[in-house]
Image 1 (tube, rainbow over the protein chains, first blue to last red):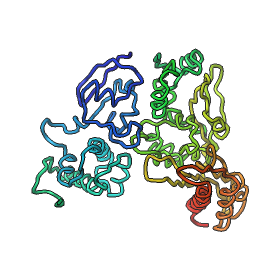
Image 2: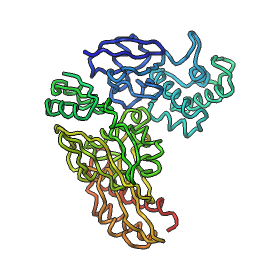
Image 3: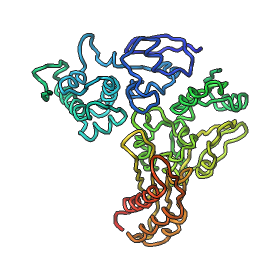
Image 4: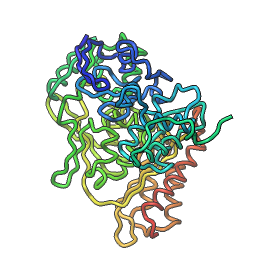
Length: 172
Length: 280
């Protein structure tokens, strides 16, 4: 068992872990942060995506021991303000960028990392940037629109609020 | 299972010697995660080498680019020295897996994986790269091609891949890759081509193909066809044909048949040459 210390969604945390345990297990089972999902457990689907020092990783393959002295951000920590949605989350709501929601936390974390390195991605760049996240429900179009919408809102300084009147498309 | 975080190469090598085939080297860990879960009792020691600073350096000196074995794909994709001297490696790294994989996957891990379709191996073969292998007594430079001959390079040995070195000679080049879909899949087939030009004469061509044999290979017949000849469409086609028919030994598996892979080799080598030498 090894002691580690890391920052999780801004808060310092100490843990004692078996080094070969996955970060995903540490997050869900030890820390109770069940927003991050296990989709495949093999690094193929991206549902388990979290940010380590701002960069996206598949937490199912990331060794918990390597979280030591790192800054981890999960979906629970995406929005910097308690009770408020991050512009990406609001845009996903408005654009209908989710159905079952299982891929969504990972999708949002990848999108957040994408916008951090490329604040105004083209459609192609969004698709490339999210290539590591699979969705079986939406067909991706609404996800791509949501990310582009979020990028526009962030640039213009508007909207972290989801708003029914701003629905980007009507869904039957 | 014991856990260690050596700070220096020497420490790590002593541990490898001590634990022999029970030692597991942890770099990015993307493959190790699987094998440890599948066979938890086979490993007696987990040796995390990420504290060994020299393995993370990328530097140029006296005409040689030295890339530490812990360089991640994400780093290789954007590093200015990599872009300047081995751009095909940057491309291969940027197209490998997906962003989440690139953040953690390392050059060393990719080369030591024994993966026949290793994205980075094909790119390095096109540059006369050497692998620096660190053992207790010495550092040995081994040409990448020879390094890749082992099914799982360095597995069970008391040595570590410390760096890859590439001579900084300017070359024209192109990297072409086909995957079954955009992300996650390793390259089905990849072709990397580099050469120098004297006027329109092709000099020192290197044609490397991944996914067309049990490991990344140099397509020597294709290279001989190209060397010291005037670049042309016809020459590119001839070389591509040779690469596909004679240099490649592709497998048939659930992803693709042998015939399809051979055709991909032909198409990708052709594209790579055309892309590298647009004026021909």
